[in-house]
Image (cartoon, rainbow, N blue to C red; front, side):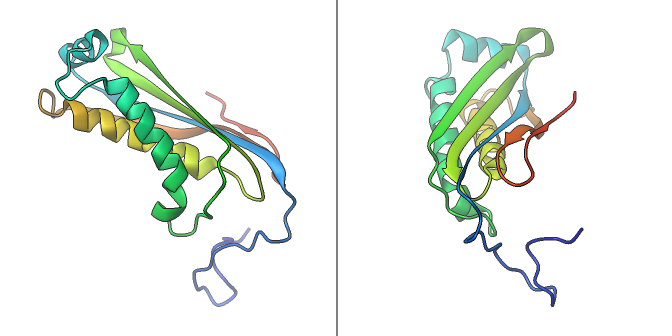
Length: 158
């Protein structure tokens, strides 16, 4: 199997999706941000000086999904049709799970967009809470599922 972003001379290129069929495509990704219990408590109680952490991070994730083609050199700019962002605080592990699902009808998938959304949501949470907790750790950002296109459906086994 060869890399699709290299031509026969090994030079970088954007994949030509012109002849691909337009299909419904979706991808979901997730990741975690670990923090002190006191930081998670402040987020949950709405006691963070910079504002509503989850809502700011949700907006940041949506914006990042839409800008992925500007951030990742070989990604196509896409006409995203839906983005869903969810946060699941896990107090027993002192972390927040971030889930992003992206959809479109297009010629290329949205895995990178979902992964970028999770990454920027986590970075936004870090930014909003760094004044009280510089020890936060962002980890395990990964593709959970993708559907559509020639390669079909992928689902991570955990």
